[in-house]
Amino acid sequence: MKFTFTTLIVLLFTATSFAQDKKELDKEAIKSMCGCFEIDFDYTETFSPDTNYEFHKDYHSHADAEYAFVVEESDDKIVIQHILVVGGGHIVKHWRQDWIYENTEFWNYDGDFKWKYLAKSKEEVKGQWTQKVYQVDDSPRYQGSGTWVHVDGKHYWESRSDSPLPRREYSKRSDYNVLSRGNRHEITDYGWLHEQDNIKIVRNTSGDKILAEEKGFNRYKSQATSKCQAAIDWWQKYEKFWGVVRKHWDSIFSNKEDIAIKKKVNEKMLWEEVFALGEKYIEQGQKAAKTELVDIVKKFIVS
Image (tube, rainbow, N blue to C red):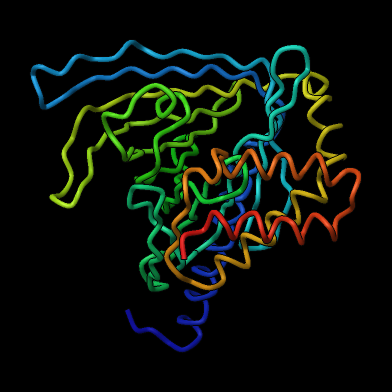
């Protein structure tokens, strides 16, 4: 077949149109993880290379209501905040996930609350979305990059990345220090599923040792928005404060350097001080909150 200039233009236009349509499908799938959800969390240890290893009990937890919603959006970025409603209508600002298209800047968890900066080429992340997951105080947690797949009526995204221990683990055990997360996010008829194939790792200067592997299923089941009204009301009250927190962390990330965070300062964790400042902000105002926030975060950052 003889290619003419016109033929080449048509092919390029078709390829560009396909990429744009695919990106819109990706964004639709990502935003499908927003709404009011009832959640079941289930984890079980499945394998260990040590035949003498004693498997821990299966873990199950349930949340009656969690509200997930877009707080920032541009053509290449979608920021989703999660707010948990627990017994008696008590509100917990939960995790945050940023989705960035063809992102080239990563902070990979290395253990001991240290994240190493890594820059990738555009070719390495072409067509991919990076999911950046943050702690409840908006400090870093883990990041993974992958391509959204839309085939046979399925819509899912997969990645693997190292992270600190989850709350369900670090409060009870210290026999490993890195969780290698195999994440799969799939949009379902009931809402969405966060499926995990995790590896529990003991990491030290000698290298990595696998302690055990784990399977996890977090099922987010859609329900009436009214079930999350308490979370919606809470966010209207605190939205500006957490916008200040996000912007401050963005300024830290803009340095493109490794980040290390102290676990405790004066017997307090970072999230405790930031949450307390959020309460103080209601009375003092945004400018005062920003000034104090800079000082709080600075004393937790290892220079």
